[in-house]
Image 1: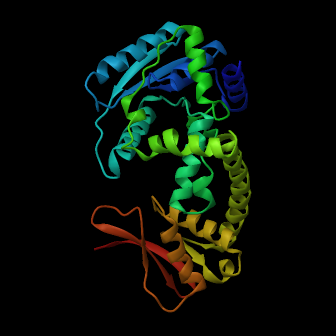
Image 2: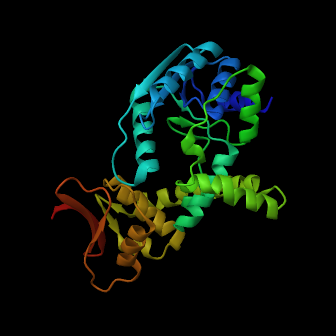
Image 3: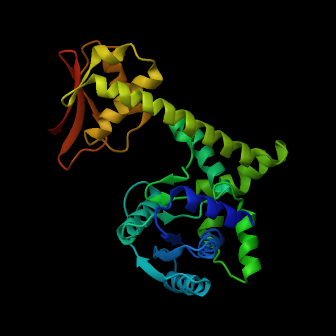
Length: 313
């Protein structure tokens, strides 16, 4: 069975112990993942996030917990969150969900039910952002603490497993609402691509993401070596990185900014800081994401070095 093979392989590659957590929504993907993980011999703690965005969400979460206990998990906990913040409902719900799972996992890796279909949607969203290869690498099979064993499994297979086991997954109405970009990709764009390209679009997108992750890992390793050479305390030598290929140089700059406290870096941020190296005309500093309240994180070129500091505004 494809799901059990996928979970078995993931556990053998990444699980350092026989205990894992599963992020369970009650939908077919995460419910099938939970059942397959239990069947493969792992001890599973199910973590169910109640976003509180719909009437009856508490009952849905409670039913998911009952289903998880029914397939043999060790424990099933419902985590109630408040969804708020910038970036729209999808982004705010995602932040709240991941924060709750991270707080509750007690040091365990958390398996998530993302499938090959989800991966294809993620790659298309990254293409729309147009922010380089990193944005279309998709989701990794393991990015600690998040594990995704089902990235080569189709969504139809998770539904079939639920049917085979007599499980009744919950169909979230948000997953069919055209108000969300990802839903329109799922229901309109990908079916059209599959029709035009003969049914191979989603696997091809997923393969492309995997290849780009491999390439990206190799480039990141080279960039890390250069970063070590170019670092001077908290500064970065312009002379050392200036002649590096752009793909390496920008990775060095990105890693350096992240080490200094930058967050939510965009391609615009990276190119502006890169211009301090390659197109130096005496321009001022570049404010990047990650500022503390009342301050901003600014990268500058000073005396042949890139420096950064939190400055008040």
